[in-house]
Length: 524
Length: 112
Ligand code: SF4
Ligand code: SF4
Image (cartoon, rainbow over all chains, first blue to last red; front, side, top):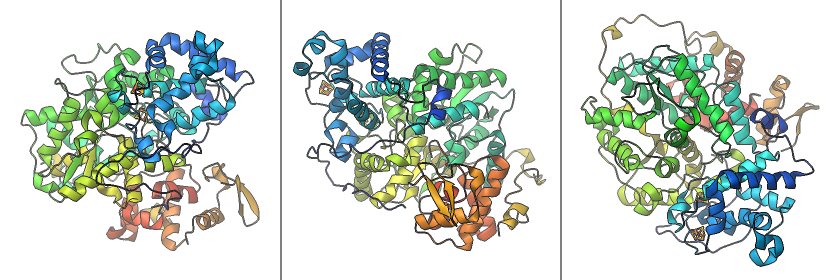
């Protein structure tokens, strides 16, 4: 692990609200997007002389478009209920990371230009001119909000700071101040098809490798197909599932579940990304462009169903907005939900008794489960209220013998963000990510001490990557975070098919890892 | 992070995160200088991985997935080394990111 250049917060047995310390995170700001990352998204490359007028005009446009934004700006009564609910405040002590403090950054500007009192007597109503200093504060602190919506659960008026952050980022993008991490990535989706920039041949190579590995381990030929026209199911999953650990172990699990279900399925190299960073930057237009790729592929591949892999915000976008963004989906099979979550699919099979598990395969682990914010507070699963909490837990309990939940104030609807959501999963924000993870890691540490928990499962690519990186700062191991379908993968009993025995070597792939491969030899 | 690094007297441009600005500028000296910045002494094992990354990139225009890399390392250096723990012991900032930087590859982006 890299050495920390900041103080890693302590983990305690009982959470404490820290003493407010202004300015602790004023220095934190992610890299700004260069003009070349702004243009493909339809944003100007840099600040123009009249940026202030542009920003105010954009704000007026958003206030007109989203009624909720104006309500949020007007309705806060400063009751204080939200102040200690944000993981970034708890981990950094910075009052501008209190949800109401964050909102006030926009509220001051709103009052100045969009309320009568603010226009006449700005000082009296806390109204502020939109100066460069205020813009810098916006850039810093609206990139210290993971849009997790935990605060909104506790606000008596339901004020959603996530939406305010999204609007702030949209305003900044519209005047040429974008965040490098999000905007470079969205550009890659447009040119290559996914956040990582994995081209088709690399995807195929990786998937062929997985088929080999699963066959070597189990003796059963599980397939990981891509771009197969006429498959029943299109699986859309975060590209991290191809690339990173423990994500890929989850992808292996999805394939095994499809194998046992006996359905035909395919991935797509064109729609090789479930994530939709358009939401993080509050840009409806970019969110739509990303979603439309899924529609185009569903049509081209002639599939009947769409299933999403383990990705938190992708599921929120899919569950809540896919129809508006890229519908209607009348060409899909109406007997199935559009879209469906892989957890719903696996859970249904478990209910029908179609999957067999050997739970002892997970006996080396004692599990807990991290509810990802966008699944917990931005969507549902199944047909029962609370399904987004119960279904993942039911799957874990079906495949593992030992499971304990973390403190109830930190799970389900009140779950703490991993600290890396909302477009903040970037190395230039590592201090923020480590500090913001503190409430979650503290709750994890407590079940480790009290119940002997060894591993935490999650169904979000961002959460998995974030914990892999931040757990070591707290003295834990990176592989304590696991994919939910990795647990399924470990326990599932595979049914061999007839063709599994005829072991004709599939030598058409993997030049890389044959012992006599040139590429490896040259590396010696 | 400086905007250029000095490689045997040659000024080579890097981006704000320390990755090469132009991938074609790579030469072994780049890895030497970057590893010194990170206080890492490059061993033969480091070089094997750097070379593998460069070859994979040449073919696929992207860094190999972690599993592809660990598998190749396992075949080459022995099964006990074919895992990310071993790669992290060589590249503490992560094989995907730190090793890619030394090898002159672009930084992997996304949810990784
Ligand atoms: S949405 Fe989440 S990160 Fe943003 S202010 Fe609220 S609690 Fe904090
Ligand atoms: S809980 Fe709601 S009303 Fe109360 S201070 Fe926070 S944002 Fe304002």
